[in-house]
Image 1: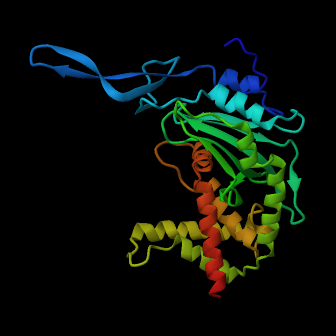
Image 2: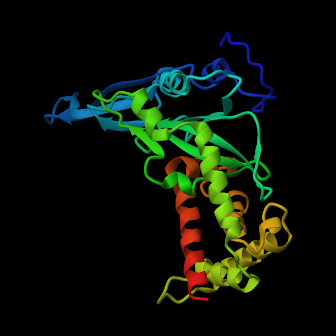
Image 3: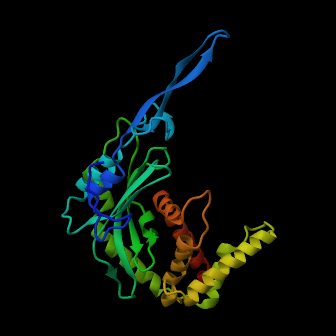
Length: 319
């Protein structure tokens, strides 16, 4: 499209230029049009607009429909919402922050841009991570325009979001004709990306102080992978459970993404987080990378981390 692309394939040697993100992903616009229904008087047929409904579609492919929305729906154009607005929100030099990832999901119906600091942070416990600011939106009604803090574990490319689920870590804007982005409010809600490093480092340190024996770890695994109370497990369920328990045991004892922290609460959550990111199956032809990004965007990663943490506390309290 006349824009020079400096990356090779889908990887770049450093931060991704905003111009490349716009040129490769956001070089079209979302549009809306009335939705029509065929009516007939028995002899003649014609089309009439359906009240309060619009079709959302891409400007470069009018035959494709993202969603049938209410008339009040206003699509948030990716280049402006995730590109320009994010740059305004950061309001910092490119030396301090840069785009670390960006892309489209679900046939372009969902998009994200992630900004990170260039250097990896290493905690006293030996955990390497990078704090991010993730901006995302959708054109199919599944995701509000959202800015949220996340953390990437650089040794295994896992995404963490447990602390990020707390109040004040996410800023959302609805798709309506009266909505707008209040940058000052967004900055206040998200704080500053560098504060994420302090928050997650403190959280990792706290988790590493929690002692978990091998026996307690396997009690946690059985609690999480077991059948629902009162429900008789099928043969297939037991086969899947046995496989997952074996994979989690391998991570805990022998995998360098987890085993260095075996015996700690951090090791417990990292084992399940790593299993979710790299071993859990996918459905409907979805790739692992796409599944993981969708889970980060819609909050499933935070929910799973919180569930594992709560289960761990329950098991340890009953020990």
